[in-house]
Image (cartoon, rainbow, N blue to C red):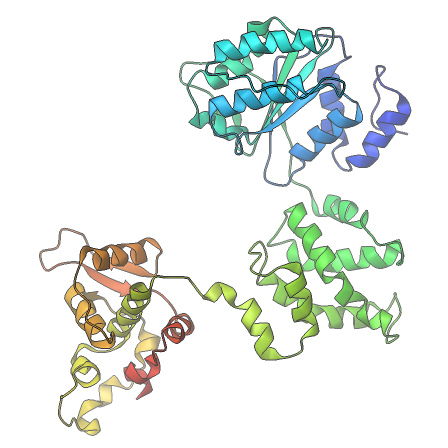
Length: 447
């Protein structure tokens, strides 16, 4: 028995709609009840909210397109000013009918102009006898626009005296939208996150025809078992499922296992899923590069692609500043003369390494250092002369902002600021390689 029922629409259309929006039947049924029939006056404004990838945009687009309801769909991030937003709505409205020629650009500077032009466009498109829907995706951007834009959209039906419904799609709750001066309250509808059962059902719909549904369902079950705790974004999971399925099928293609031999299939796919776990959401490499990486059995090639997030693009002198900060954090102060003074004379190693200093400084963690010591080390390790300009000091501030350095104590200390380097040894070695600097030769722990 179908879950979606409405007297204004054919049963076959609703059945097709239900197949397109799995696990969102209750939300679609609620929207159909609010919309009513085409000619009926609908609710002035609807606020739909939920986390990323909970189906808000997809459900609204599918619902309006399948039922062929007149609408415009505008992304508030792409049209980030009130003028761009209002003009885009008018352009889409004027181009709504396929018979009409492409409309000329009409400037719309104020909301009063928009109301006047909107009423004219509704009449010219012969839409005054049915509900017209304006869908504003990423509606949280409306809060950055003029104070009158959001309240005016919520009362657009009243301002235009037309049968129009404004639908706001957002990832944040309505309480963060509500102006201090008050406004018309929209009908709010919440889209919950997909459960693991919902994700299993949706992802299984994409199974390739050359394999059985049970085989693909077993693969999706393994995929969700690995990724569900760290990623519940449907789009990301669909990307991961498409990317790794060929590796899952390899034993079957080679004839080493059948579709029901789940143990062999799991052992084959497990290391590749673990590698994919390191790059969830990052998109450091393209899908084609990832597939080449899967076929490349060389460990060096794999590490090159998968550890890309360990490298950060920094300006030339910022790299040396970070290296100098690392050396200042992990080398004792009295060793600076040995490492950075060209004519320091002979220092006996027996006297240099005392018994109570056998503990590795890397195990003890980074030590704070003053700014003048950082600059002194910087001048020593950089080949050419570096003037202590404002540019150098601004780069230190940038490293603190990037959390590669941390400031210790307060800014108002009389003896100047003190810093600590917060990066790991592998990270700083990767940075040092980009400027051909052998940092191991300058670390006290590796003497």
